[in-house]
Image (cartoon, rainbow, N blue to C red):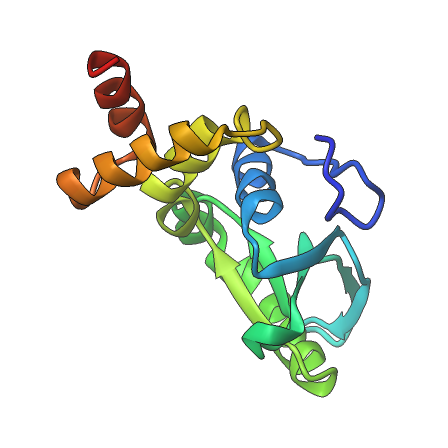
Length: 163
């Protein structure tokens, strides 16, 4: 997925949930940059064997929001439940690693990613780099004031009806 915020200008994802997260991060003004599979963490398992774990993404925020970077793992809830015993040691290692680096470690699931915000982002993405005439901007703001809380898709349809 092409993104100026990605450390490589193109975010590679391993599944649809990661792709959806990257759409949201690309659109989020508070996100300065993100890097997929940013670090390799070594830890010891229950038997003392050294293992490696690579979290999915590091998210860095613009200075104005004063938020610590987030090191995140993206997983479906079902997968977390089924494999929790296997995941737990690597997530503990990631928590320690993140804390040591002044970051926060988070598990992101479909509950945090597949939200109305994602739907709004996907809808608005195609309009992101378009210029808007001042007259159209006034119409949009007027309709927003009349409608109150509304999804971008519903706003778009209302504006088309009132042309």
